[in-house]
Image (cartoon, each protein chain N blue to C red):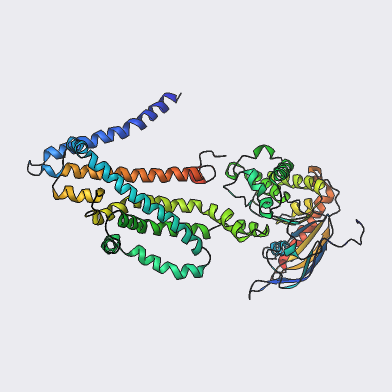
Length: 269
Length: 260
């Protein structure tokens, strides 16, 4: 019947992405060799990037760990503090009205402008990288979690009140679990921002840290030396770090939501 | 105890309700429910029938007048009352068992073993004992409503408040649940207050029907339904039933015509 066709489709689903990748590498080579020999260094060939990976391996790995560590610390702190603040903000519209404008200021000030200020305040290195990551992750987490906490189904709140639930029961047994989908929306945004924040922070604050800097610092060094292959390798590692964060967040939200939330509905009934 | 002198289990005396400075929702509503009554409130939209349930439940206070529930005021009658909402209002992150357990956990004072026993019994009553591990999203609309009823029954209420619980279901499911609910009532003998838009459902379920008029909400007329319990599919086909359905429809229409 249509079984062979279904199998073919499945094979195509596996092969086509690979084919696209191969095509892109070929196109990359074509552009590389199409450039004049003086300009060719601007776009290193894939094998040159691969060689840079090997040559600069230890430096890249160490930098990725530094950046990843800073990102994780700032991200974790943002999650904890934003959750606490969201609980406070969910108390009443009055509380929200008195805090939101200032949160907006925090969000609207570009991190690139804030970074030098912070470095002067707390000094370069991991500390400022963590704080910059924290600042970039904090806002989407607070906004989404607060929205979740105040969007509890009216009927469920009535049901809890009719059961004479205590205020803490209403918050922790009803509002918090009901807010989880919103919380994870914020977490996904923060998860993509955290490595970016850490790299931006490191770009400013990584140098003169005494020890080894992170990926942002490495990018500065490689670009000053015109090491294009290594610069591309740094970009690839940064991208991989982003993937690790997003994958981690998706795994967490799957654990928390897949059994009951419609965003993971595979068992339609 | 079961003599005419027994005090009513729920009594409303000259109850007025308005929200804030808004218009009068309920105007001097008075009636008394005897133990075991199945009272249906029916009337045009905005006549305040759901408001009456909320007042009895203690969720909102009266503006004027008094409500007595089982010898006390509604807010201290917790545990004697249970509410079934228009929506199933289940917690989607809890499975069926945990959902039915919620009121017992919130009230506290019931041990885990006892809770488990009560939940199993409640779910058996609504024929969902084999769905304990399911999550709400895995259930059909009718099943969710049955879980909601089991949850209300878990506190062994003496008074059950049902706010249009079957309104969103298809007719066949609704008829089934009507019969099931009456069958459970045969066993557990609570007093019920039921809000519906369906005349057929009102006549099938109740021994008393209170027809209300709107703007402001007032009691317009009371009808007694003297059809014997248990009621079945045959009841629906019987002449007295159909005559009553016609009569209630006529009164409802005259109430609708009262509108300015």
